[in-house]
Length: 232
Ligand code: GLU
Image 1: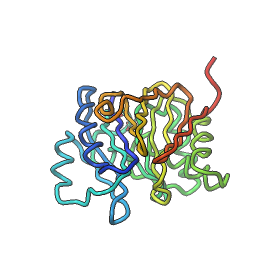
Image 2: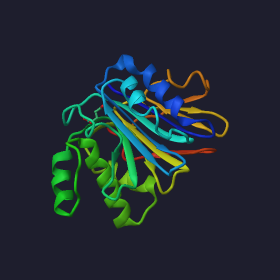
Image 3: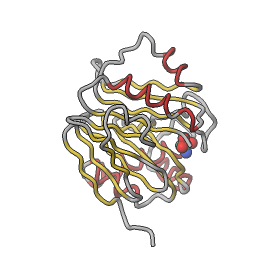
């Protein structure tokens, strides 16, 4: 199992995410990546290897900013590599996803998306999911949370996901089914992680998302709903 750490609030997001990913190292992983809303607008850093390799790689980069998503990957689809590391990005470079788990029907979805003009950079199942969310949002003209909900109803598999929209950086969307996801509630800030260990230093107020729940997370607002039908 790999790890997810994300933050939205008023603190520097980078150290929270990088230190949180280190706390999840015990889960095992092969690569690391972080996307952050910063002074230049947006940056994404991905590196095969340890969290410390990503730290060395980004030593002189702009790591300021108060919204970030971070991931340690345990490769299931596509070999461990910089390109296959998360976050993965939509066709229009707007949406970014981190994902724990497996999208079982990714091959069929990928073929359909390619036929409709999508171009993929990685070999992962995860990249297919973010392209699908983008396509649904464009066709249905919905907000991101609804597009994620609709996309999750067409995928088969297990997931904990967090999505960042660089054109709407004041919110994150998270969802889970079959993989754990925890939200730490602060005052004017939220922490999201695969388990509570990266969060407990900041807040004792944690919510464990249930299967089929989807969350819209803003600095000062949390909305949780169902992403689809509950399994019988
Ligand atoms: N299936 C995804 C991949 O291979 C996510 C694996 C994970 O849980 O780290 O990239």
